[in-house]
Amino acid sequence: MSFPLFHRPGTVVFLDDDPDYLEMLALVLPRHWHIKLFLRPVECINYLQQEPPFWEADAWNQQQLIDHWREGRPLIPQILGYWSKYTERYALTRVCVVDYSMPGMDGLQTLDELIEWPGSRVLLTGQADEQVAVRAFNRGLIDQFIAKQTPDISRHLIDAVEHLLGTPNARHAQTWRVTLGPEQNALLRHPAVGRDLAQFAAKHWTEHVVIGDPFGVLGINAAGQVSWLQLETVEGLNALAELAELEGVPPSGLEDIRQGRKLVDLELRQALGRLGPAELTAAFSVGQSASLLGALFPVKSTFCPDPANSYSSWLARQDKRHVHD
Image 1 (cartoon, rainbow, N blue to C red):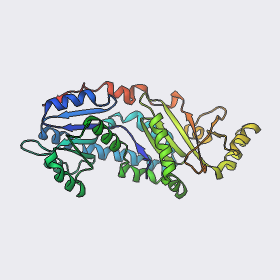
Image 2: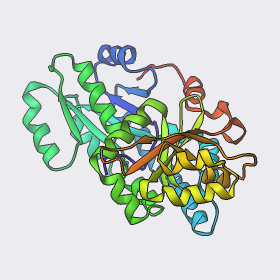
Image 3: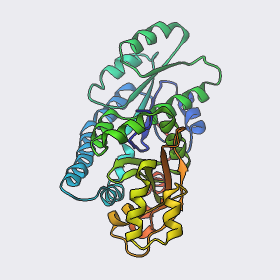
Image 4: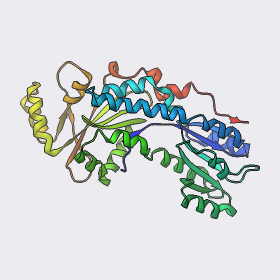
């Protein structure tokens, strides 16, 4: 599936025996990344080997949301609670970038020690090590390799890490896919739909979850502001208009819904237990076939996580970038 059902930021670890190279990375890497820089393989290994229990605890927390949903609890307020409570999810390392040529223990030997760590692996190589990297990639030991002599190496490295940070985690996808029906799954697998949703998410959110009940994407930006991208098929517009009529939406609004010009936030209101009149907002096509529509509804701040628990606030509380000896 091209569009990840579950996405969030995470830590990026770099291991290299050249302190000047690591200091350079500290300066040029995107400021919205949380990074750890290591000179010694043993220190890096010890750091990452402590993470698997926390990955397991986070996976269990997510599964609990699904279990409660099966028992009848709506997903949207549960996800908001998860975002508010478990801020250390950002500390989990998503990508590890390791230099191959190091004294004592090379990069592949280092990665071999990380049997249970579930993140993505990138190997930096010299020209003489390229065949080693190709064999490691073909055996599935690494996810990417980059030659250090590549022109504009920093840009290539940033692009590679950004790609891996945006790659769906198989376990998270399995957890959240159960909320989707067959038709919803099929829609999300369409390349044009996945592309449009990925572009939308990159513009609006730092973190998001796709759910099928109701159908849409709940996203949160770095400042902690939450919005709901409601997804609706063209075939479901008449039924949505009928529900909107019961909620007192005027005839002009009902016609806008039937014609696909606007969507209404009925399911979001119900999930949050929100009172007051229904709100309509402009709809837009998702994908090229015009069979799927989306509309973005902001979630009022009273329902959102505390801004102190946002990604930006969490990142500001972390230590300044430095090389770990």
